[in-house]
Each structure stands twice: as structure tokens, then as C-alpha cells.
Image (cartoon, rainbow over all chains, first blue to last red; front, side):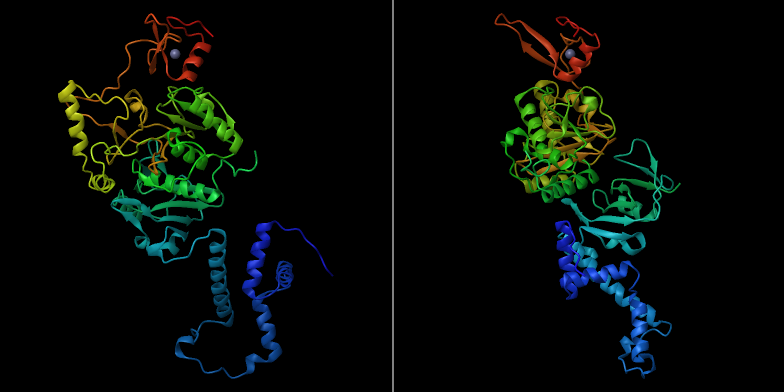
Length: 206
Length: 285
Ligand SMILES: [Zn+2]
């Protein structure tokens, strides 16, 4: 059955890109996406089914190089998930390149870095600007799982007297403040909420 | 007119300007270089301020534009119309109603509030330019906090005139770090720069610089212990509204040397008259 559908141009371009990347046609991609959305497809289940069909589990394991040997406690599910994660990261890369037009680079060269506080560690590797160009520093966009006005005390430009923010720690921000006018700047995001913490803010544990 | 992108500039350019603004806010008083775009108006018309305003505007904004305090000069009217056409934003002359105020040479008398953005048009962003024409040198001076030359200049003023003669673009020090040119506002306005609840953004188009004062930032006018900074003011009250504490323009009224002093901030003066205040020559509105 043929279904025609209307799509906004940006979404269509994105579809084109994604389909091309997987080497399938746009309609194959849509059918695949619909099947997934309807719960018809679960990659890991599919793999188990194929294995069963071909009796792969009963075959003797092929010899691998040491580096490829899975950790003893790693299940096939873990391995599949790892492969999928790598694939997601690759598509994330393409997504950023397509929508933001920015290349993905190493932490030391980044103008922007996006991740959880743990994932961004060590934050000392990010650009802090140059003494004559302090603006050439990184902006860290930190995804947090809560954002409230409870936590370390903040003072400095932009803050009338003092305020408080649920920061993941204080030491890193105190060290960053000590570099002023150099330093990185942070934006904390939680759902549709956002808090800025520029390098100029003094952070104190309370 | 719908052939323009919202607020004239393309989204990529606005993003680039916003990034410069955010870095400016992170390092108050430091001049951030940015790639200034050609605007459909000459440089003297505040292309830097216009680009900063364009990058800040959202459709819900209410824009006020003033030139030397007045909403009705050619420059202010042109810029206001430009944004009405390209961004279709609401405009106002009332300081307290505006969410974004673009200004040339004045800070409104009515105290600004949190959430407001004041955008300054800046002709020469570098406060050390008159002392040292080389960009590489002034950049080094800012890096090393080497501001002795600026103090020497102010001190020469005192030696020559018995007081600091600089009355416009009076240099300030921001958060004890960067010396900044507040644009050619009268030094009367300098005390409003510091601890202001509004965000203050400065845009220099020709010189391709953006700098900023976040709300509640410490801003100190440079001075000496024995010659403290004094915001000067004409020894008059406004002849129309009777205000004693506003910045006044001297207006020649006739060939016989008649003159009057009126608030340079036209919205402030009209607002006072609307409330029934009158000056020497004024009638209640
Ligand atoms: Zn008046």
C-alpha cells in the first residue's frame, strides 16, 4: 500500500541524510522507523532470533585476537548495546554536523562541550582563553538531573547580593574563578530550565 | 515587509553575535572581537548597537530607541522604524515599558529594572585609543592591567584645569579589572553604570567590538584620592518639569540670547509633566 505524507523540509532533508547514511531508501527508512515505533523491532531480540534460526550459538567460537576478546562477564546483549552505542555516537556526530554545522573536536580544542558533569571530567582540559583574548575559552553545557536554588552560595557580577545553586561540586568552580579573567563558562540545563555560571562567579560551600 | 529575516540579520550572524555577547558578560568590561556585518545604514548611525539589538530581539520584545535622551530625533526614529519593519516588534517611548532600549549618548533617568537590556551605540570602544593608537599595544595594556597612562592623562587634566576636564566618555574600571569606555555618555550618567539591575551591552560596528556589564556589576569611575570623581550637572532645574536631578540640555530660544534648560531625557520630562510637575516655563501637560 502506498501512503503519501507531508513533511517539513528540514525533517525531509534529515530523513534523506539518515537514509543515505544507512544505505537504504527513504521509504525503507520510514517503514523501519514505523516498525520500531510500533514495537515490532528490537535489535537485540532480532539478533537472538537470527542466531536461533541459523543455530549460531551452537557453532564453535572463531578465534579472535586478544584485544577483541570480550570481558568474561560481558554478555552478547552488552556487546550488541556497545555496537549500538557506537552507532548512536556516529549518528550524533552527523546530527551535530548537520544541524549545528560544527565539527566535533577533542576537548582541548572545543568551543562548546556538552555532557553530564561526570562525562566532562577532567574539566581542566578545556580552553580557558588567552591572557590577551580571554574570550577564546570553552563554554560547557552541563546536563544535570536537578536544578534548584539550594546549594553552594554564588556572588559576583549578575547577582544582586547572593544566590544559591545546586552545583555538582564547588572546588572546580573555585579553581576556575581563581583564573579570572581566564576560565571556562558553564550553562547548566535541566529540562526546560537553564542556569548560567560564568567564570566571574565566586562559589562558596555553605 | 517579509523579505527580511527576523530583525534583518541572518540566524548564523545572530548566533555569532550572541556568542560574543555571552563571552562579554562572562568577562565584564573586556572588549570581545566580533565579525561586524554591513548594515543598511552608515557607521555613524550605530551599526554596532543595531547588530547587538538585532541579536537580542525576540518577537515579544518592546523596543525603545533614544538618541541623546530623545525618542524623536532622526537617528532614533530611523532605527526604531528599521526594527518595526524587519522584526515587527512593538515599540514604546516609555522607559519602564521597554524590554530592550537602544541608546546613543545617554542612560535613561528612570531607573532600569531586572530583565531590561540597554544597548549602547559605541563609536570608539578602546578607552586607551587616544593615548596609544596601536591595537597590539592597548591589548597588551589590558592584559597586564597597565592603566598608568590613563591616570597620567587624567592627572594632566587636573594640572592644566585644576580638575578632571573629561566630561564625556569618562573611563571606568569594571569589577576591579578592566578599564572600559562607557561610550560618550555625560559623566553625569556614570553612577548609573554600576549595580544596575539591567543588562548593559555595548556594540561598536566599525571597530568590531562588543562588551558588556551584567546586572549588579561594580563600576568605578577613575579618579584620585585628592580629586574624587564628581558627576557634573548644570546648576539649574528643568524649565519644563522642574526636575532638580536630571541631565539638562541648554536650548537657545530666540535671537536675543534667550535660553532654557530642559531634561535631555524627553520621556522622563513628559512623564513628570503628566504627573503635574512644572518648571519655570512649563505648563502641566
Ligand atoms: Zn524636565
